[in-house]
Image 1 (cartoon, helix red, strand yellow):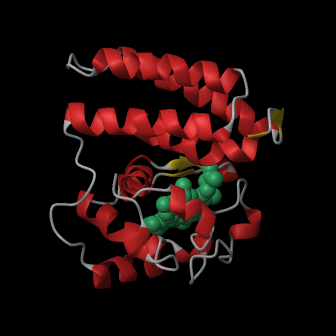
Image 2 (spheres, rainbow, N blue to C red):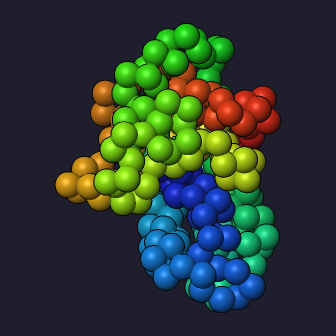
Length: 200
Ligand code: HEC
């Protein structure tokens, strides 16, 4: 379910980079959006029984249709928002940590484990950044971080993302505890006013 939520969030955030005004802007991104939408549909089928399952499935079908018909970013993000809300309500998804994260520890973790790629200030310009494809995310990209949610970042940190350098995966989650992941979220978004990071 967490993976499903993560992919749904990615569709909402990255879709405008793939499609603009009904036209493909970026083939690779668009292929990824289609792929994510299919995976989400498969994951939705396996959701545990719940009063919201049917509604989620309907929204997911709608999402797939929107993505394949190159609908507007607004239509897509409305549906991804609906799915997020249904999952939160129907499955008690914990979208915020139970207590305030320890930022000092988060900072130390970031400095030790993340700066080689993401850069000291999180701008995505670390020492090995140029050798990576895709390039590390710029955490200071205000527009992106108005879309990203605290839970979305947490989810990425727990599951990792594909980084195609030596087919290495950013499997941060493998060695981060749940608490480590939560602590790093505000650090990643520290350039952006972290209070504005959406929690739902
Ligand atoms: C080996 C290089 C590398 C290391 C080390 C690394 N990252 Fe990443 N990270 C990446 C790349 C590349 C991406 C972008 C992937 C993409 O666009 O699909 C990324 C994406 C992310 C994202 C997704 C951001 C978003 O808005 O979707 C987060 C969060 C993140 N990294 C946090 C971290 C944290 C925290 C650490 C340290 C614990 C870390 N990363 C260590 C390469 C790295």
